[in-house]
Image 1 (spheres, helix red, strand yellow):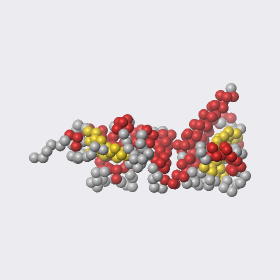
Image 2 (cartoon, rainbow, N blue to C red):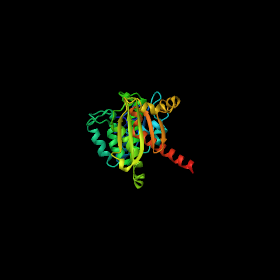
Image 3 (cartoon, rainbow, N blue to C red):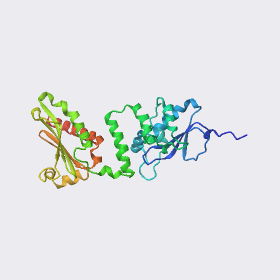
Image 4 (cartoon, rainbow, N blue to C red):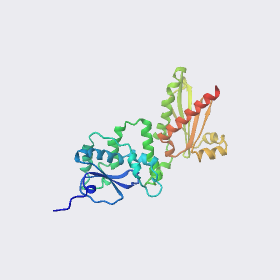
Length: 307
């Protein structure tokens, strides 16, 4: 007769490694067998199989982009040297019960090919992180801004910080008419477009493009002159255009704002503008929200000063 299983090593439990993976997801999996593990593994136990949905819901959250975003911003050691998650950090994660989680988990496990480590599993070309996102993110009902922040953290900040393969692409220049620039400009258009209808004017964005620098001019024009909301201008060989505009700010302003702060912004009579280096990461939608709020704050402050 075999020895009785020590409670800690008996099913059912959620096993969570102390270290986190390179994409900042937790290295966690649900254990349904008798299994021995070292002290570097945390074990969260349940009393019976009827509570398995709790473990699977927690597992999905820990292996999703939500945890990556959380540990990037609040983790004390993430991205420093050896990526670790502290007990208190795991405890503070917002856990919630996910509907039909057992059915969804079984669909993943069918393709596990008897591998214990679910983090190595791939289904239909999707990583486990992507599969967990499909399960977790719909429950959060994120708005567009929150989705942009989550995307920026997981697709740009973490890969750049951890030097993932092909992370250099985020520093590459955007082409003329690139959708990233369109998305950025549309944030401003959506916010301001209704503000000038009553006075017969339109809000448009003029994009000056070069391989090195991109400038956006946000203008209010008469309705009679309106043709489209976004105007693209190739300024690569226009020596009297984008460079002259930037040079007018002075060498010190260019050095401090463009190469340290990564942007130059200002206001004119019926417009405002933003210049940045032509790097994909600097024109992400999440940065667009930040820039929009800073512009709105500057407008409000200017209005107060006039009173």
